[in-house]
Image (cartoon, rainbow, N blue to C red; front, side, top):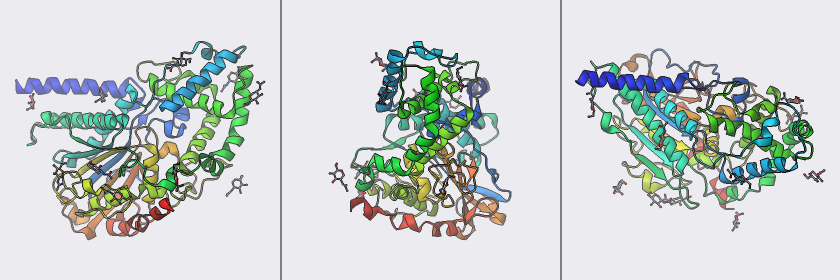
Amino acid sequence: MLISCAVLLLGYLKWAHADNTETFCDDTDKGFICSPEISHYWGQYSPYYSTPSEISADVPSQCTVTFAQVLSRHGARDPTSSKTKTYNETIQKIQQNAESYIGSNITFLEDLEYTLGADELTPFGQRQLYNSGYKFYQRYQALARSKKLFVRASDESRVVESGYNFTRGFHDAMLADVFSHPSQSVTNRTNDYPYPILTISEDADSNNTLSHALCTAFENESDDAITDRGQGPWTDIFLPPIADRINSQLPGANLSLKETSYIMDLCPFFTVASQPTTSSPNGGLSEFCSLFTVDEWRSYDYYQSLGKYYHYGAGDDLGPTQGVGYVNELIARLTHARYVEDHTSVNHTLDDNQSTFPTTDRNEDVLFADFSHDNDMTAIFFALGLYDRTADLNNTQIQEPTDPSVAGYSAAWTASFASRLYVEKLVCGSDASGTSDTADASDEYVRFIVNDRVIPLACADDDGKCLLSAFLETLDFAKSGGKWEQCFE
Ligand SMILES: *[C@@H]1O[C@H](CO)[C@@H](O)[C@H](O)[C@H]1NC(C)=O
Ligand SMILES: *[C@@H]1O[C@H](CO)[C@@H](O)[C@H](O)[C@H]1NC(C)=O
Ligand SMILES: *[C@@H]1O[C@H](CO)[C@@H](O)[C@H](O)[C@H]1NC(C)=O
Ligand SMILES: *[C@@H]1O[C@H](CO)[C@@H](O)[C@H](O)[C@H]1NC(C)=O
Ligand SMILES: *[C@@H]1O[C@H](CO)[C@@H](O)[C@H](O)[C@H]1NC(C)=O
Ligand SMILES: *[C@@H]1O[C@H](CO)[C@@H](O)[C@H](O)[C@H]1NC(C)=O
Ligand SMILES: *[C@@H]1O[C@H](CO)[C@@H](O)[C@H](O)[C@H]1NC(C)=O
Ligand SMILES: *[C@@H]1O[C@H](CO)[C@@H](O)[C@H](O)[C@H]1NC(C)=O
Ligand SMILES: *[C@@H]1O[C@H](CO)[C@@H](O)[C@H](O)[C@H]1NC(C)=O
Ligand SMILES: *[C@@H]1O[C@H](CO)[C@@H](O)[C@H](O)[C@H]1NC(C)=O
């Protein structure tokens, strides 16, 4: 009875999982695999895909992982409520004013019904997080078999839901693992689901390391100033020829540059809204996508990268400061410190309490999962110094993430839907026999892996790992609170 039950369950999981990976565009391991020459160039609207890594992301030989943490963006969603209204108005404008629709690639617009919702995950976005949890379990299986997952989410519905979908995938991977190794003396954790998720308010006065709000000068910064130093000049270079062509295909529509960029946005949004329930001949992409060339998608991707870099990255004087609180939390986790030292966005009521911010127990809660947004993750990545080797992005000339001066930075490589940073601690050499997190700090290493790309930190060796102590020394910016004082000047 017990065995047949397990076999049935295993059969179900296999089936459910195969359904996830084989029929549709999202592969558990590689992420979005359909039409990569287009779908990998949508900036933060790209669905997560595994990015190229010069350094193997495999655990280095002679090393054992003793600590793992994921920081994840929510999955693919509908446009935000203000954007969905604007997009719909753009479609209405076309349908009211276009005298004709010239070219077989644009006739679909004539009868298009605007069906996108607002703010919430699409079914595909939920599936992405399920797959992400499944993958995280498999990658850190040796730890995950015995450790609990400690989960936090910024309190917005799509982010919290992403947390639930991730834990479901994680849990199913665990059950599949445990039941396919029946000889293992593991506890039956079938009933552990659902996992508790600590949610942190996004109110304007809330201390939340997963969602910025407190830094007045940053929140007040003028959009025009951000555009002028970032996306603006590039917009004026790459969009006019595209707008001219689309307008020539839609006589009377008279779309502005901004409206033309909205038509481009609708390619990813209609794509993620229709995955996986429809499959179209061009590999599952929306009809909007074929209105633009592969080169134009590269230009669009760069446009989105400029937007992130010049507001949440090093291109904004206060951008990286928004990630400081999270980095200080990570330091406490990595060093088993009882208290987080931070005077920026940490909520000390939560973090001073081991129930809501466990750091000291070396044998429990070793796996951490945090859920947040693209903008906050971008600030955190810069506060961590992951892109310290990136020169300021040129706002008049495209730079690919493969360009050495960009050092792996692009919105699609770092802030896609369901993008994820893994932080792992390793013990290497003769100390690497056990999996317990009790090694001498002098033997500990740390690695950062963004969408499967091992970040080649300045302190890193050929495996991409830094001595933990050496890495911590690079974090003076965060330890000193970044430029927090300037928030209130
Ligand atoms: C789009 O706008 C039209 C016209 O205002 C409206 O009838 C329709 O309900 C809107 N669609 C959505 C999904 O909001
Ligand atoms: C994602 O989570 C939501 C809310 O808990 C649930 O309704 C949905 O079925 C989940 N989807 C997947 C793929 O796990
Ligand atoms: C694990 O527990 C669940 C729920 O109690 C039960 O249905 C299942 O048969 C158990 N599986 C094994 C392999 O013990
Ligand atoms: C800190 O967290 C506690 C517990 O969730 C909450 O009641 C309080 O409002 C938070 N304080 C700030 C400043 O965010
Ligand atoms: C930010 O904006 C708020 C509301 O508009 C205003 O009260 C405040 O003075 C501004 N603060 C700074 C630092 O500009
Ligand atoms: C097209 O739109 C612009 C504003 O974006 C406006 O100045 C111009 O008059 C319009 N042209 C026509 C022919 O409607
Ligand atoms: C779409 O069709 C028009 C008219 O046939 C053509 O000029 C344009 O190049 C096509 N767009 C793309 C991206 O192929
Ligand atoms: C919230 O952060 C501010 C600094 O931005 C700090 O003064 C305050 O003590 C924090 N509140 C809590 C509950 O940690
Ligand atoms: C720590 O957090 C737990 C869970 O929220 C709560 O029950 C407990 O009272 C808190 N402890 C302290 C000392 O505040
Ligand atoms: C950006 O690219 C343009 C065009 O190639 C070049 O003229 C300019 O010097 C570059 N700017 C910087 C800051 O490198």
